[in-house]
Image 1 (cartoon, rainbow, N blue to C red):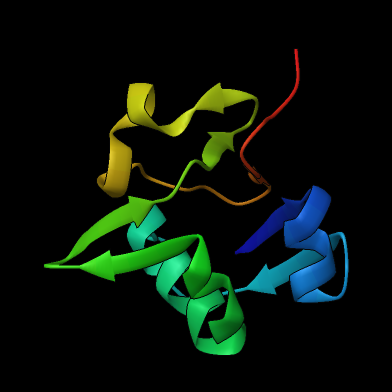
Image 2: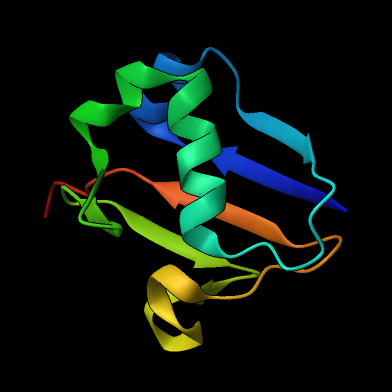
Length: 95
């Protein structure tokens, strides 16, 4: 199963690239498992996103799955499928 993760703004700078393509052997992958894998490989993202008590805690981030907010798709337990695109957007500022 392949999931594409796209980072924007300062998150792209922290990860060092805009797009990560992750191949996982788990067809029952849920969002929290994906976030754990990302944090394992990019611990500096913990400034913006952490796992506490088996829950994703974001600090101003927005997580989209195929363009829809993750909270409307099951939140931490949102199921991911082959070919899904996860966008992780930093806090928005301005006016």
